[in-house]
Image (cartoon, rainbow, N blue to C red; front, side, top):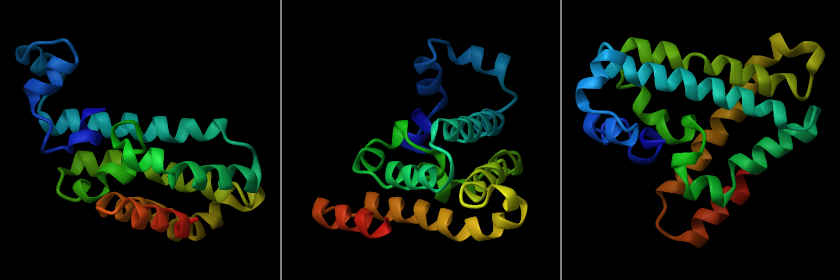
Length: 160
């Protein structure tokens, strides 16, 4: 996905339309504004992320799988195919309200993580899931920001 690869500001309308095989004029037939497009993409990406958790093993084993996948060199090295949180987290705060609203669907991500260790108590566990999830996102961002692969790999390893 272009937004995750190049960032929201680095993805121009003409590039996005070209990727979709459309002309620039077709953009406004589908979206009211660039902000509208970003909000739709963000909502879709969050839904896709939540849906992907259905393929994880149940319980703690699935949580371990999620951490291993999220903090993998492959996820770090290919932001365009990774999770939206790690690729776009720092940009969302500069977006319009509708994009922030779309990203608030991340509550479902937290619910999914919270339900893994304690399925019977998932509503109250959301608060406990916020810290670890934030650490996953930030660990991956830090690893991506480093120029030395050895140190970047150490950061991922320590994040586990």
